Amino acid sequence: MVSVETAKERADNVRELGTPEVPTPKSRIFCLPIIGQVEGHIVLPSQNKTTKYEHVLPQLVGVEESPDVTGLLVLLNTVGGDVEAGLAIAELIASMSKPVVSLVLGGGHSIGVPIAVAADWSFITDTATVTVHPIRLAGTVLGVPQTYEYLEKMQDRVIRFVVGNSKISEEKFRELMFRTGELANDIGTVLVGKEAVEVGLIDEVGGLEQAVAKLKALAGSTKPG
Image (tube, rainbow, N blue to C red; front, side, top):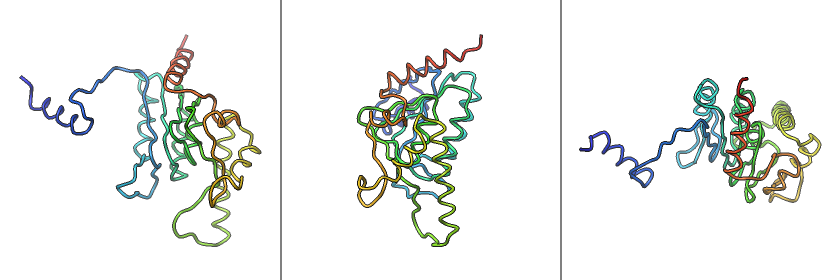
């Protein structure tokens, strides 16, 4: 006889996932999705698909501390979002002792770029894109010198992080960031799949199979003894 708890769980699964049974295989790889817009200190409207950085940071700490997890797989399909929140996630990923592999699916735009390159090895699928552009502010902006100085310092932080965690040179990254004529009413560059690898931003073109295999190889090479 099915218990009340089991029946309720199955009903919830059907409503949320479209199936009464959800496989729960034991895995030593922790999967972290960065989806939609990276939400920072300001709560975005409920209709926006967001990744809340205050939810991500504790998960990263948990992965680092868990003896059952040997590696982290970061899946990105993001339009970007809050710069400081994205950098916080990227900095924490880059400082982890356990191997991390990132995979850009669909898009890894704007502040998604530092998150992607923060991994020990990064992949991008053939059809996925990354957008490199200068930092932009939404809403009311005070037109005073201090505002522009703040933006320049924040932009330098992003550039320094990306260059320090990828194979791209600072000169090339700045050239892509400030390129004109490619984005409508804006400046920046869109890189599709292999193009992101050719400029040194992403390590390799590949999908889930390649990303998981690389992560297992990195986890195996970091075993003690």
